[in-house]
Length: 391
Image 1 (spheres, rainbow, N blue to C red):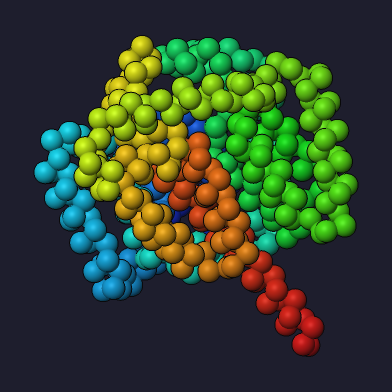
Image 2 (cartoon, rainbow, N blue to C red; image 1 turned 180 degrees about the vertical axis):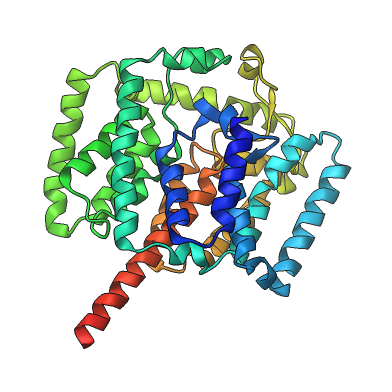
């Protein structure tokens, strides 16, 4: 019932051409806890309910009719080739195949969803208000889960998640971009502090690193020395007083190395079974990667991806993964257009891909959209400022 309600709501918000509806959608996107913890409430039959908005908004602007023949000639053969290869592969699993080619449909969607009413609904101030309000809301989530770590036990059947909380919301993944745009979003010191607090409680080491790096890049050169000093003090205080945080407990060399060995173990197990040709073209889309610990968690042990985009792509496509990644980044660049925002996305994509098969999850699409929005609102701001100066 919750899924049906959200599907109808997001479809209506996408179809109706009113700026306040588009702004409300983005608020829901950032404020609600869309994460693995609540997956059954927003994900079904391989479809995220959030995509209902994207598709209906694209349809309402008739932008789907503007897909060029060049785009179709590029993607349709790619999809057909993937289907043919999957059919000829004996280890083919249909549900895995759909997840493998998910990014192809997203890239095709991006080609049809440019400069539409959704983007025109935002300016710097509206985006700023949504982000700041979402910061406070997500901090409340994080604080609640930190004080009540057993809360998710009643939600999960999976023993892995019921034993420890995970704050892996879309908002957490977008924090690096928010910090990178701290000046254009006019964020205050307390907002930055809360963003770090959310990330620390979430316990994602890769996101902590990305947030710190993006914050460093966002500052002026003279501010960077003070930032490094502040960061050192902050982590020292956290390490002393909040040792029960996952990110602090596991922030040491042996633990990280052990985590990587365990996490990437299925890759090396699969590699041992490779034929010579597999090293070149991979196992193809539809190949399920055996993950032994999924069995005792009551999950299908043949998963579509590993906790690394690069290792997953190598298993699926061999050395062909290199041109595929270039195609993905080229398409994203065409969509975002703003050079600074694309640089931020590129850096994020290359780093987050080390420990996340990012093209397999909805975060990939909305990270692109968020960068597009930031670039769009900044362009509008520069345009208005230039107009004022000329008057």
